[in-house]
Length: 166
Image (tube, rainbow, N blue to C red; front, side, top):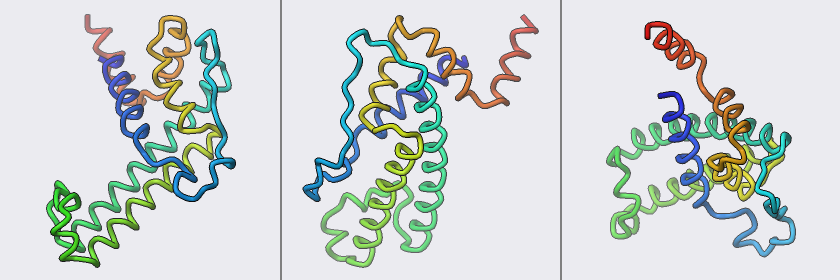
């Protein structure tokens, strides 16, 4: 069960954060973006493992913060909790204050993600590559280390108790 939660977490991070606007994408500052080239052998290095773990924790913290910001936004502007109105151009044209606040919130989310990657010394591209490479057999030992590091302690205790009962 722990493995399912972990793989779901990796998959969620991989999908959720891989589809965001890249820093410098609209600013013409592409030369400032650090590029990443995956290793030819496909192996995740120890420093990449540590950076991935650190970025994962930072991203989790950012997600928690963003979730709170979303709740405040919903309460303040009385929009649908599913935020469906934020993709309704007619609604947004009729409510420029909400459109502006949503744009600010969206940009804040992108900044929080970028800060999470930066704090771990990793790019979003490298983070996403590591997330995918964790499923490769060649990285099974690293995958176990990452899984252990990212599994909440309460989940470890629960699984340990279930294993003893068997």
